Image (cartoon, rainbow, N blue to C red; front, side, top):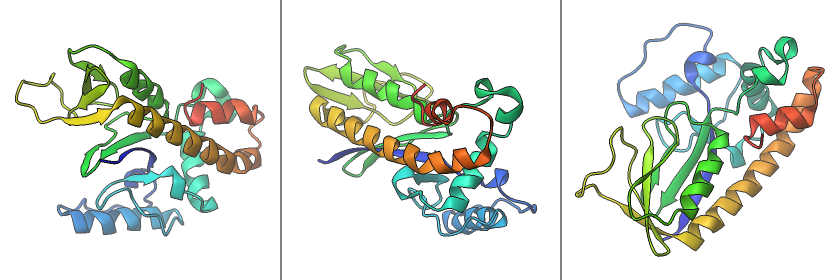
Length: 212
């Protein structure tokens, strides 16, 4: 099975909406709700990672208005408080193995790529946590085969369904994710420059994309 680690950033609708809306109950309605909230901020045409998701793959994020909207939220205090007021962009990495997917969870961000690097290198046969937000996922190794589970607040039980990933395949997916993050940082650079924050653009980008 193919293995991918897809960098995504979160566009939380409530942070972009300028008018109050009642949150919907179905997936199809969620998609319309999300698009309408983003449109309040002039952001149109974004395609989420999956129907009903708030995550957008960084590879497809090129529209300057969308990038500016993301940066306006991420850098709101940077001009006054400096780099220490900035955090990595919310989101993280989707592990896809065939039809199985482990998506980032609450409080996940682009700095979580380091967690995936650690996960790809573990050798323990005991379940080890992988921080992707909360709840987290878990990984264990059997030689060069890694097993993952869907995110949970509790360590996996013996009957918990798992998906197997070859160690080399995960390392390759991580390298591709790194390339996508570098390309994304390049697209962010002119927009960060345009904000004239009085800070090093390189330092700001390092924090935003999780390199710092």
